[in-house]
Image 1: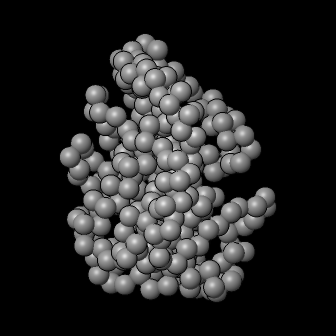
Image 2: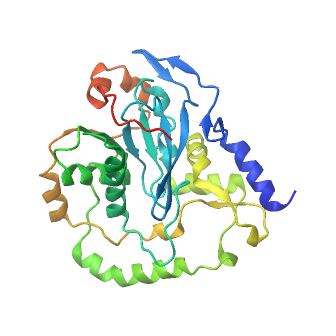
Length: 313
């Protein structure tokens, strides 16, 4: 077996995603306090065509109902919600999206820049318009929460509820700092775009897991990193002729300065939000299943997601 095939087989075994031909198999359910919850394999891999390629994601729950739209953080992927979704009521559909250039979604072509905030806001709108979803519930973690915040402000009468985890709104940037760093950001973006394969780092599985744990600086444990890396790593290209892994996301995403907001902009958008808002800030040792014991959480956060706007592949 050649090196690339070995890495591919190893990654497939590690992911343990319980899918076959893009469909979830051996679906199980369990009961936690206030009702039946989905199993960890109760999802389907989704691939949606877009002008630059595909947007991938994981659809949890029934596909004949309008879903909660869930967006992950910067340089993460749809696996962010893998440990949350099994704890939520099984009848609530949740569509966890890999943002452009993240996870299994297509990278932008060379010559096309990422404007991380505006790209994500436009992606939400693209999906809402395509499937006719009405007043969706939006859920976001970190960058994903900033995107859902901005979408709710751009379309204040078209969002039902906003659920943000570990963020209240977009990170603001000082205009002088932005002006000072813009040249550096443009050069860095072009450097990444022309980075030769020979300089692409290559890691074995345990090395990559440790690298990510260290990057999160204690905020994410090892098991959670393993879950995230199911979609976050990929075998290195065959041309490198080495056995190992690299990050699946587009390296150009590391340049995040372009298209950021000032404090005044964020405050202006914040005034436009009219939907119900739930901001969740994690505390050490806080367990999601403890939060779920409170009926207010399920009723406020999700309620009735309706029966229209289904997705059928």
